[in-house]
Length: 253
Image (cartoon, rainbow, N blue to C red; front, top):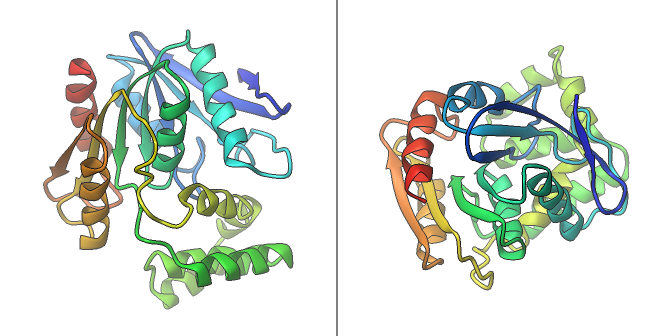
């Protein structure tokens, strides 16, 4: 397993596959290489790109260094761009989109950006405060349940998941929920960022209207961005539909 060391000493684990221009895949909340959508997507993209999938700090096989700061996580991604040769495309899922945007504004090596449903939904101070309260008290399971309820998973489903065998793995990375919450800030599109790379913001035609509206608003906020909706897709987008859209966009970026 290759690793890089970020500026504050955090060890970032990643895997690389394929041949072609570098493309880095960025997970959203509660996901990492071994538990999330990126490995199936990488398998489809490796014929066209050198695909990098990595564990964001505090997840999977990556380490962590406290206290968290958005700038430190940007440094992690910039270190991976450097390891990829200094130039890379970025694809980010959900809240990972906030990290991709912050990095693109800081690193001239970002050659193009694709985001899927970045959840700039105006935020909730109440959620943010309760999340940090639970994490500070070591109540990681309750923090995960709070997040799941916040994103719309019905309470009976959450209760069933808490009794399942995979919930302990979610509890282990629960502290990173606060990282994604900090990345999203007040939940508004970060229009102040200067993005020069071409950008595609994707949404699913069967996703909730709030996420679809957030994707359109994100695209509207940046002069280099366009928006595309994938028919029939939800927030749990199929890798086949996503891979085709990414290949088409990055071929022209």
